[in-house]
Length: 118
Image 1 (cartoon, rainbow, N blue to C red):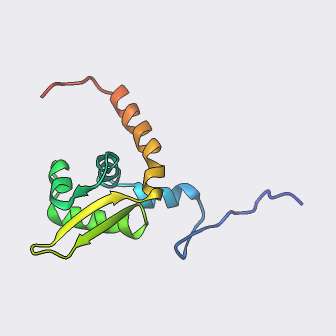
Image 2 (image 1 turned 135 degrees about the vertical axis):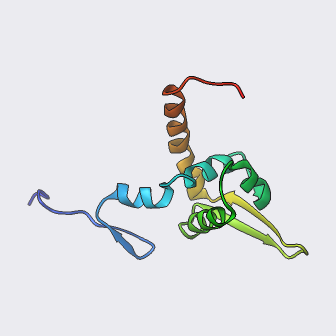
């Protein structure tokens, strides 16, 4: 029996997807998610430092983005019980596994542009 005409289903964290790319784009798609992942590839960052490294992101969008990345398991949030609270973010092992894809997209983007010194 062949599989012509059959549809693959992918299940991730209880949600069904009919295309693996649909799952990936939900996980890392959008303006800010790949940029957050890219900035965390060098290691753990404090919340404020990470947010400042993302030029133009609002506080609300930053919070939404890191929460979504945490929910999908791509990054880990570390909260230290201090006053004021200290929060750090780092890539999870799954987050580290997507970095080659982010690096490839970054390289492709560089090939499309002419560098301009600021």
